[in-house]
Amino acid sequence: MELTIEINQHQNLNQQMIQSMEILQMSITELENYIENLSMENPVVDLNSPSEDTGNQAQEDLQRKLDWLESTDYQNRVYYQQDRSAQDDSTNWHNAEASAETLADYLLSQMLLHDFSETERRIIHYLAESLDSRGYFTEPLSDVAVRFSCPEQQALDLLREIQQLDPAGVGARDLKECLLLQLERLGEDDALTTTIVRDHLEDIAKNHQQILARKLNVNPDEVYAACDVICRLNPKPGNSFSSREHLRYISPDAVVIKLEDHFEILVNEYQYPHFTINSYYQNLYQETQDTEAKKYLQDKIQQAEWVQNCIQHRTSTLSRVIHAIVELQEPFFIDGPGHKNPLRLTDLAAALDLHESTISRCLRSKYLQCSYGVFPLSYFLTPIASRSQVTQAETTVEQAKEKIRQLIAAENKKKPFSDQTLSEKLKESDIHLSRRTVNKYRTEMGIPDKNGRKV
Image 1 (cartoon, rainbow, N blue to C red):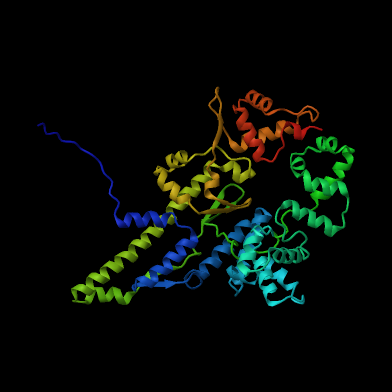
Image 2 (cartoon, rainbow, N blue to C red; image 1 turned 60 degrees about the vertical axis):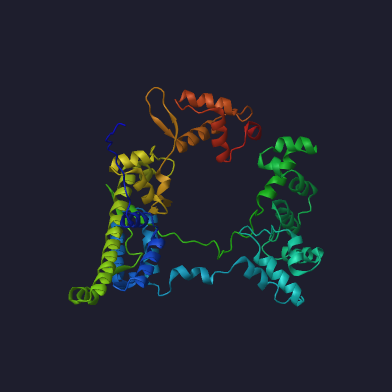
């Protein structure tokens, strides 16, 4: 029997380390809820709402932003003016959701004077509340009949009542029915338009007007005229109404302001409440002779202090990551979408000398506000579509799509490029994509295939 000595490294995560990682990956809303729960569970925590302990600082920050923006772009100025107005408003802007009228509210208000039985009103209420965000009813009517112990025809008749309401097309069970309802409402009794919607929507989606004209044995101009009518219809009539279930407000974790010669980066620290450790319990911990009470207070004070450290670490790490993103993706912040550099998680981790898992947690559920809009931090991690075989230069997916778009825009519309031809032409620009990848990117951009682009 031979004895050997081996040296192994093991990383043991204690509860404090786990808590630190959890706080790092929290969004602003999650952190706000976490601190509020902590204040209820830990008696030594004195919670101060953002309006109490950081309200003045928030106002100062907003004024400082406005001063910085005097010589910069109009969009940022408007954004911060609105931000300041929202803070000055005594009404909590998050409650705007409660006052918004839903599609169901609007539909039911149109039927208040209709003469329905109590059972019919219950069914109508259920149908209206069951519409999805598009305004469609997708549940089988047989399920409605079972739920209310009524004939399926009665459920259909009541759905038809909803389909007569505004907005036109509401209550449809699919896109085809939605468009047909709108044509009927508009008085468009043109047989060709109705036939195209009923039987040939797929051809229209593929831009196959010429082929469709041959199928229907009509003049292409008639098909184009019918398509113009169809394009003016609304495929999602419920979109203009709020959805209390899915409505979501995004609070940016940081704001990037473009100045004349540099970028100013502000991490949002006033969205969540801050807290302090109660002085009474601190003094009691120092003075009490009760061993059990002393141990209890020590644990609670240490917990509060550790959470404070974790929040500070979250803020400093987030600031470092965002500064690195702005530096590495500077073309985006100058020229906007379509100008991102190749950037992988490993590149960001190497630039900051942090582990990839730390970067990943920091990016999770966090958003950045800049002059081009609000973006999740993960948006700035750009996948690589191709690598040059000569210079090793990398091409992002966005850049590859833009090149495909340019090639298609310049093609002969009578002889459009196939995906294989596009792949070959991309290689001339040292962008190496297979035919299948070109097909994938073209489809994602909503560009029809070769036949669909042919004039």
